[in-house]
Image (cartoon, rainbow, N blue to C red; front, side, top):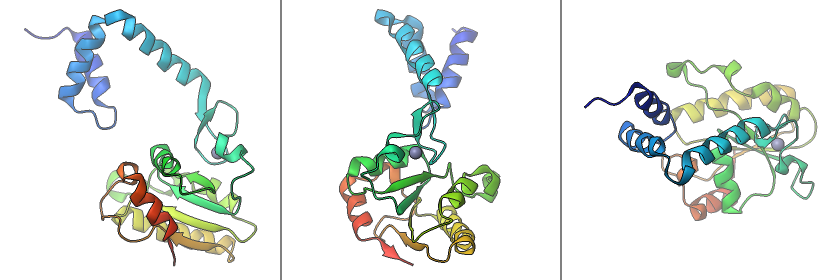
Amino acid sequence: MSSPEELLKLSYLISQLPGVGSRLASKAAIYLALNPNNYTENLVEGIKSVIEKLGSCANCGNLSKRGESCRICRNNLRVEDQVMVVQDVSGLNTIEESGAYNGKYHVLGGVLSPSRGITPVDLKIEGLLKRLVDGTIEVIFALNPDLEGEATIMFLKDKIIKINSNVKFSRLARGIPTGSDIEFLPGRTLAESIKQRTLF
Ligand SMILES: [Zn+2]
């Protein structure tokens, strides 16, 4: 028996979520179609609310209430002259959960990737440069340890040096396996690699 078109479409949409394969998507779509205890309606309300009320922090790119700076940018107890560059909001959250960092962030929105067509204009680079024009700031790179992450670090370092030669650069300590995703690292490993970070 073939599934109704609506179910196939829903299943396809769910399969586009990060980390969700087609099998799990199909199972979830059937669950949603059955709408147990109005779960599906509540989920729709939750999604609508997130779309209406949340946006990106204009300063750092973290999630925030629409039109407002995020809670990290607003927190003046955090160290102002440290900016950790992360790929995405998931990575930022993982680092926050490790509790090992008390500076500010900049969410790049990805890494440079010629093979996937991601170029500098696709990343939030201009916003980062604007934040680094003055002062002695430490920029800590917390990008995934792979070739694309490495190429992005070198590209950004070159750009930043040109606008402020007082910026110090550091990166998470070696020991994070190449190809691993920062988002999924155990908190303790991450905390250690932040503490042991090296200047370069
Ligand atoms: Zn922010």
